[in-house]
Length: 189
Image: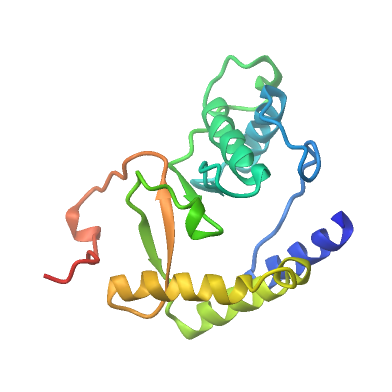
């Protein structure tokens, strides 16, 4: 039920210190990749001017809305930086710094992109993330998503030599000002 999902998402956002904005597109299981949707999302990107954007993975082996939304967000990020789109001319163009994809399941992880692993081992971070997942009661009641995500995060964490990590998949190669910014790799030579 959409009203219940909105309540759950807002509860989760509060736990993470985030603010949500809901956008009406086509509705659950009816989402289509349309230019009008990408333009609507590009307008939000221009207004909020984020540096980093997260989107669902483009891999189609998941709920169809997830991969379609990933495509729309990718296209919106590109449209947000162009000045000539008629519907967007009222706000100045904005180029994000990086687009990352996330995967809800291992099946949705892109096989052809090396992930960036974000360490979430801090007890406070792990506790907030777990509570935020549990706030989505309608989702976690259908399948044990919390345990699935914690297990995946633990496996990624083991790769880093730490506790827990989340995998994000960059849309474009990452650019560093210095190699000193790289803390470690997953292979412990």
